[in-house]
Length: 280
Image (cartoon, rainbow, N blue to C red; front, side, top):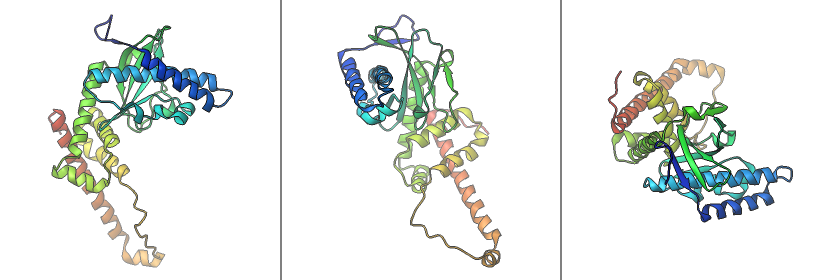
């Protein structure tokens, strides 16, 4: 790793990175539409190098990213969409976005917004012999990203590592035997917690603790799977009136309160793990 600026790292790119980038670009020429295939091949080449830069940095930080699990390693997907994702098993997907030297902002393609835990920006010069890590910005959950991210507003690499560490600890907690974690798993019926933890981490960073129960409950509700085997019972208008709207409303309110209470307990646990004292 080299750097002329103590806050920025320049990662050299070897022959393996360029060999893979050339291979992917050649495949894209065969798969992309005729009118856009050359532009798509150039895009894939640089995106692949950006992923390699972030991959090398994270390996240096003792992480074990998985290159081949990302959509950017899938020939058809990368030929069609502008993506440069890198999977960190047990943590989530980072998007590795390339910029050229001198650019002051970067647009995030729509295809690179969903299921990302954050964005690492990599600057390239004409030679493409190295990539400079300019910084990082976390995901904004389901909120749309701004059309452009200003380079000057990026967080530094220390913030990236802190972010990944929180997500790693959060995912480990949800797989633990803690009663709160067990209750969450029973509710969600899933083992893929990366996106959920990323959303809860955003709430932890951006929301006052007094509002955690409501914001967290929204995340839990959105993550509850729809069971196709649940039987739907239909009632006539008279039967609905007789059964009573109040009873159904009470059930809905009770379920909402339970989820809010669970979300509050979960975020309190995560805040404790992440090292901040909760304050109401």
